[in-house]
Length: 163
Image 1: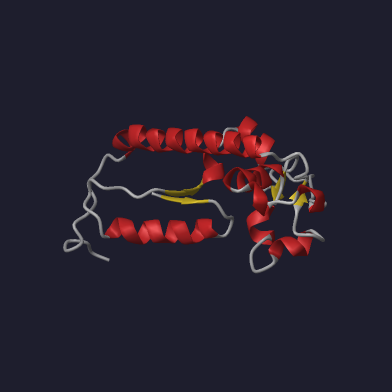
Image 2: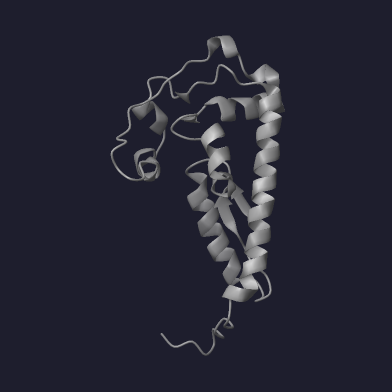
C-alpha cells in the first residue's frame, strides 16, 4: 500500500506500485493513491478544496499542529486565495498540471499558502487524521471487496506472452 500525502508524490507512488505488482504473486495486490482520493465530497470540501484551500491551509496546518503544535505559529500565518478559472467544469483538474515542480505554490500564491490556516487547531488536526484514516480504510476495503468481481481473468504467464 502506497498512500501519498503530497501532490507530486502521488505519481511516484503509482509508478512504484505498478513496478512492485509485476514482481508479486497473483494473489498479492498493490494499491497506490493520495489520501484525498479516499475522502468524501463533504470531507474534502471541509479540509482540502477551493473553499478550504489547497496548501498550508486549515486542514494541513491543523494536521501539523496535531503532530507538534510547536511547529506552527498561527500569528505568523498568512491567507491567500489565488484566482483560478472557475468557468470550467472541473477546475481542480488544473492543479496537478499547474503545480508541478519546485516552488510551484509560489507561482500561484505570493506566500505559498493557499487558504486560511488561522482557525487551525490540534484538535481539528486529530479530527482530520481520524477522517483520513477512516476514509483510506474504507477505500481499501472497497478495493478488496470489488477486486474479486472485477478481476475475472488470470494474469498471462509471462513466458507465454506474445508481443
